[in-house]
Image (cartoon, rainbow, N blue to C red; front, side, top):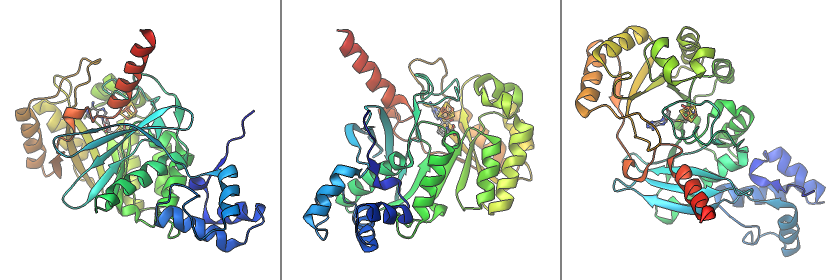
Length: 355
Ligand code: SAH
Ligand code: SF4
């Protein structure tokens, strides 16, 4: 049996102290390691040159620093950069760097695959493989921060919008959010974090109870149960009449306006009538609607709505007093919709194996 080494990225400062104590080391040594890891972005114990060499060697035997291997990267014409990382067990996940004028953002994955099965999404196509550990979620952020630093840029925000359903991987997601806001670890305000969910109502309630200022983005994609049921199986379990009150409760508890994501798909949800139903559904709610042009997926039948339809949809919502924007289409040329790069990579590997 192989014993999994302790991943330092998963440890709270108290746990790091306990781990060092087991090695017979004083508490200040754990602070030194945390500092190397979180502030300096060290990737190996070897480079922690204020630790005795013997300790560095022992740490190497007993622990890892959550390092991910870069498998491929693709740069889009608009500056979006997509990275495929491989995990210690050989699985792969996607991470996307989104450059904005106000500062760079990273889009991170929380699971390998996804079990929610939304019919328009590439992430669920190969099925669910496993949850990421909090260390694996964080390692994506640290790797991207390191890449950006070498370019003289700073990571300003992050979105949990890569593959996977963050609220279906509750314990890793919460541990990750704790590490983000911890002054001894990433030390970043949760105001700069957006968590996107397909709508797991009990977990939205649990997140609201934590009271953290995370922006909640909800993948609505339909104004009625009739339409949502067609493409999002989760809607059968948590239909709109329970989802929307859970979001209202989130806004009340955290004081944060909820974002509703709405992908516009031809002949599914992009008519005048849908816009009017959506405006009625959301009227009076503390929220913002983000209209997303659909990224077509080769294996799936859905097509993006035309630009005219997207604009007409926005104008119809706006006219009814709904706060709405169209999300800038980014990375379409590098298949930046979640799950696309990984699927491609898996397919290419299968083809190679089949030769
Ligand atoms: N599982 C979470 C977060 C990951 S998906 C969720 O569903 O919210 C992030 C966002 O990308 C979701 O709003 C999802 O609906 C959207 N999305 C999925 N496939 C897409 C595609 N092909 N084109 C555009 N957006 C897509
Ligand atoms: Fe999973 Fe989100 Fe894709 Fe749905 S849209 S399958 S919840 S990753």
